[in-house]
Length: 175
Image 1: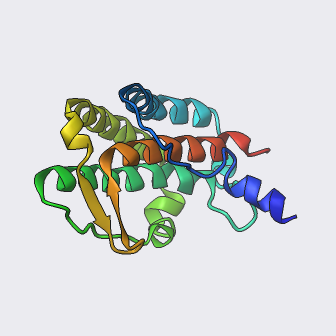
Image 2 (image 1 turned 90 degrees about the vertical axis):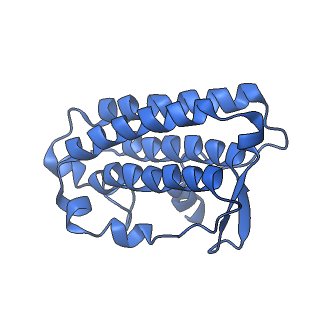
């Protein structure tokens, strides 16, 4: 039973940072990030309101909450990237994503607003990421909640995984 819950929580598995992060891998991750908004839009385009309000697992977020979570999370990531480039080893501000998912806009809001935001955000974020030099990609931010530093080139992979992780939640719901 625990294995079933784990596969529902992590349908593509947990993120595992590779030992070597090549330029090619970074470019592939950026392509995944770039493609995410249209994939999420396609996965949700014909869903009815009751389907959007279906949780992807027992006691999990609804599809609507997952869609709204993506730009919330990726906006925070974009800001963290900017901080890492413009400041020396900044300590980022964590946020309570589970509380954000419980706000009225996340629980009841029109997903088209978040889909449009995700699309615009990813265009800007991808343009920014592709402008980074090899030296830039080595820059870090410090996450106080985890008590460790994160290198931007690794964070790109984490967010490529994050988008695909939630896309799988959306696609795997059986109505």
